[in-house]
Length: 260
Image 1 (tube, helix red, strand yellow):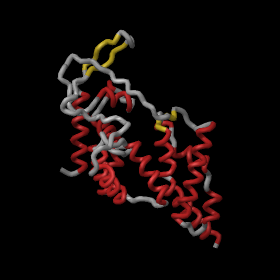
Image 2 (cartoon, rainbow, N blue to C red):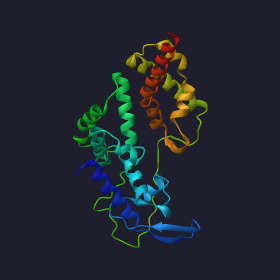
Image 3 (cartoon, one colour):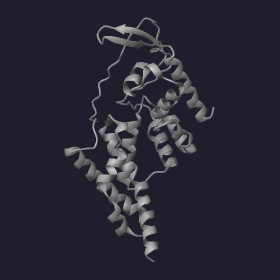
Image 4 (cartoon, rainbow, N blue to C red):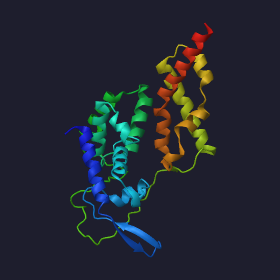
């Protein structure tokens, strides 16, 4: 089965789980809630963590949700991904019990900083296979949203709304302020220097003149991401900087040409 077809099947399974929805009145909350008898996914946990509109859940919503569980922002990003990136996303999905997307991004970002080297999709796939996929014993601090056979609902009358405890620091408001903003600015500046050494633009002084760490972190971190894990957000500052510096380098090349 092709990877995209595999994820289409997962989206259909998630949509089927949501279709088992039955409303009931909860006197504690004073409103209607929903009860599910899922076969494939922990629908309650997904609804809580992904802020899902349970009353208007569509197959397209299911596709986007599956894409996020596989490491993409949305379904269309998955459709445009390279073969290596797709294979990696499938491994991430299948090894959800070993490592979460956030943990993987943080791990990858740290490895790139330590080695002062930016991995391509094939490198990332190789690393994941060697370190995680082919190694037993890893246990995520995140949450595995898939249901094992023993977890699949056997009691149609069971009502359970899981409230998972999250220990990681969360960013819940933007723009960043205070100590958080200082920390993110320092991360951006340090990453900028590493990327500059790696990219080696033709006009480094012009690139530095265009570089603005304040604007950069505000562009990367958008309100529709909230709430977001702080470590994950820091990894995004590092991850998107290469493309940003390349874009600045192109602009400076154009400036230099116009002056000649």
